[in-house]
Amino acid sequence: MKKILFSALAICAAMTACDKKADEPTPITDSAVVQNYALIVSESYQDAIKGVTNLKTQIDAFVKNPTAAGLEACKKAWIDSRPAYLQTEAYRFYGGPIDDSNEYEGLINSWPLDESTIDYVQGDANAGLINDPVQFPTISKQVLQDDNGKGGETDVKVGYHAIEFLLWGQDFYADSPGKRPYTDYVTGTGGTAKNQARRAQYLQVVTDLLIEDLTAVAVQWVPNKGTYWTDFTKKGNESKAILNMFTGMGKLSKGELSGERMAVALASQDQEDEHSCFSDNTTNDIIYDDLGVYNVYIGRYVKSDGTVIDGPGLDDLVKAKDVKANSDQIALFEASILASKAIPAPFDQAIIKSKDKVQAAIKAIRAQADQLPVVAKAIGISLVVPETNK
Image 1 (cartoon, rainbow, N blue to C red):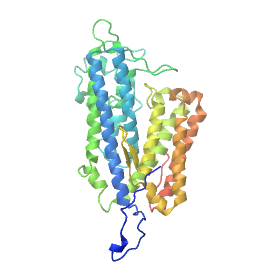
Image 2: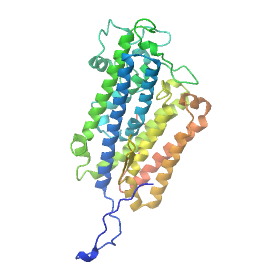
Image 3: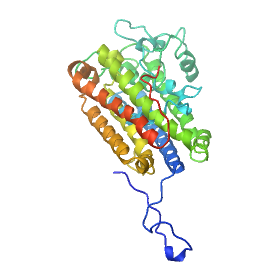
Image 4: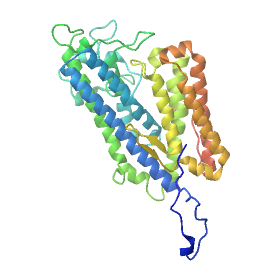
């Protein structure tokens, strides 16, 4: 349950006037909710950076001495890095640092990804930048940044999913994720797939870029210093900030998560429409995206080290105005998380063999989005949740 924040007990006898009982909680203000949200945003981006920094440590060790165990350590670090970032996706869709003109979200988490623009694929051993030393004699941050997206939306050469592909390879299997051999990184005797050293270099460079792009977003949310933090928490901007909070929750729930990431894949039954299609991590993607939305509403976040941030949330504001609307919203959040957890992994098989469970989760996530305008209205916020984000 969410913690309730109480003021220190007032000693009425020592005051000239006392309008409240000594044990009455201090009303939650809009400013307190906005400040707590901004703190959660800042801390969760820092967690995301820590996760990818650990991934980079594992990758550096692996490319120095490629082994099967080393590759598995890299895969585990990638999976472990995802929950923190996925919970930040509720901070999108309102023009914040992740979605500004620098388009960091596209550099960090773009999908779907055309694997053949990066490395070899089934039927084409020479595909990708890695296997084209003539056109791309060097692999550097600038080269990857400049070439990213040149071939269209699926020409994704950077971000989490580029790293994912380089670790797992293509997934052609019903019972497992991709099976890229560690020997794709072994030079000399025992090496498989040419250009092993270039592949290793690409893996290191793209991971460095991901850390840099996450950091560029995070610095704008540094408490009391970051440019966006200062604007977002500015006195007098509370209504705009709270509308942004609702907008992020609504658009992620209805347009992005239940729509583009789930309904599209369910309709096509195509593994290529799966969010994390190489690692089979998509069910976790769904759960942590949904949890991130719930976090925003209740003003709570559990850091990667287990520390809990639990402060004033939108639920406190709504509860003060409409207890039933707030209870209904929380019940819908909890139902959607349970429905998301009920989708059996891997997702590429669930959209074929467990369509009812996927559809139930889609329905539950959309229901929580449909309730958001109701609770927003209770506190004087006009919110429209669009069907899609396109």
